[in-house]
Amino acid sequence: MNKKILIVVLTLMVCVALVGGTLIFLKSNPPLEINMQATNENQHFAVVGFGNKGWGDIRVTDVAVNDYEDPQDSKIQVSNEVQGLVHTDDFQSEAAQPYRFHNFDEVTIQTGTSPPHDAESASKDEEIYGLNVIHNEEIRSIHIQYSYFGITLFEEVEISF
Image (cartoon, rainbow, N blue to C red; front, side, top):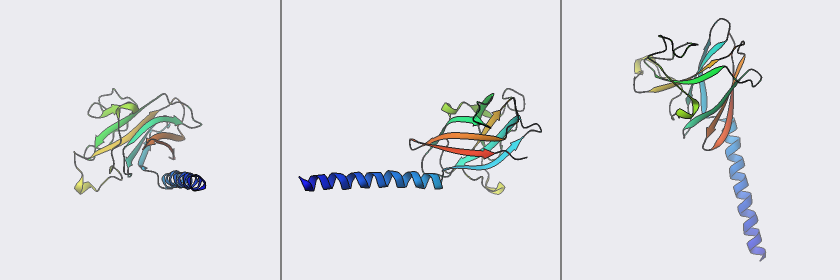
């Protein structure tokens, strides 16, 4: 009987150590990598380029601005390295037509998409991602919540221009 209790306790300790170690590793090495940011003059619009340096896919689940306020609008832009990302506050504008804008639940950020490669090796086949955020006040920070292997992680981007 004592041997069974010892095995159960040791198994639980190993599980807790594995889960805890995984969480500490993900917090210190987040898979979402921010590789650029841009905004307009009054900072009511921002685009944040990002990619996935992890082993599994990422899904953005929520976006907030400044003091965790809901933005007026936000979309994920999917493009390629040759075309780049468009800086627009109107997803229906003529300039935005060649680009693809999606809601969060429609996009999975693939692995190996960060950072952008050099201009000589740029390809139309390599997808890049940008988070476009529109807000009725100046955007000082963007808070990105995302899911990675079922674990919820957070990234904060300070908009400094």
